[in-house]
Each structure stands twice: as structure tokens, then as C-alpha cells.
Image 1 (cartoon, helix red, strand yellow):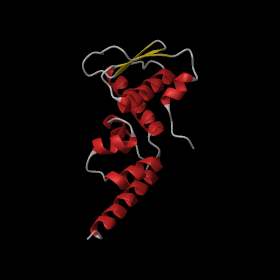
Image 2 (cartoon, rainbow, N blue to C red):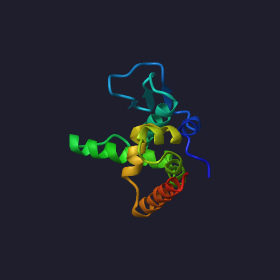
Image 3 (cartoon, rainbow, N blue to C red):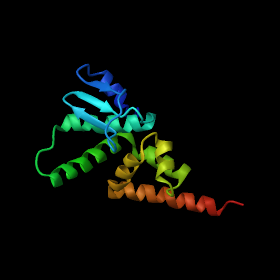
Length: 148
């Protein structure tokens, strides 16, 4: 199975436009206005990939309605959906085996996403996924203790 590629998704949909040449407001990596996705020009490749996936989920789900609390909840759901698309369980387990779990930044670099996506993926693990990741962590610890 091919890893999820948000750039491929927009290439297949000519109605979506992505703009990457502008600086966005402080703290804003991306924004969705109509069918136009704005990505902050200062983002690196992994940040653009993660933010584009996030904004595409917003596009699919539509504008959240309701109060600020409901919008925050929707933002968490969108983060988790985007993170799940970007980081398969196999990729996460591989990253944990190589990088351990001490540094979310190192995991993000290995997975080619931003730290927000890694945090969202780890937070939203199912119980079965959590057990698989924990087994990888334990195997890592055993291998490290066997080192000369």
C-alpha cells in the first residue's frame, strides 16, 4: 500500500488551489478559504505535507459550526484524521524502533511530518495500536540492553 500523499490528492482535484508564497499570521501554518488552501511560506517540506493533509481534512468535513469549544474539538478530530492518514501504524512502529520515543521532533523527522502530527497520532492510538507500539518500545529496550 502506498503511503498517503496529500499533494497527489490535490493533483487529482483541479478545483483545489494551494498557495505557498505568503507569510501567514503568527502561529498559523495553514488556512482554508473556500477551496483555496494557504500554507505558510516558512514551512519546511514535512510541515507543508502535514499542514496540507490537515487542511484537506477540513475541506472534506466542512466548516465547524458552534461555539469555541466545539471548534477546538473539531480541530483535534481533524488533527487525528490527518495524522492517521500521514502515519501508518507500520511507519510509526518503524520510527519508534529507529528513534525511540524520547524526542517527538526526531520521530517527526523520521516520519516526514511535523511534531503536531506525531503528537496527534500517538494520542489517538487505538488500544491494539498502543500494544503494538509498546511491544516495539520494549523490543528496543531489550536490544539496547544487549549492546556491548
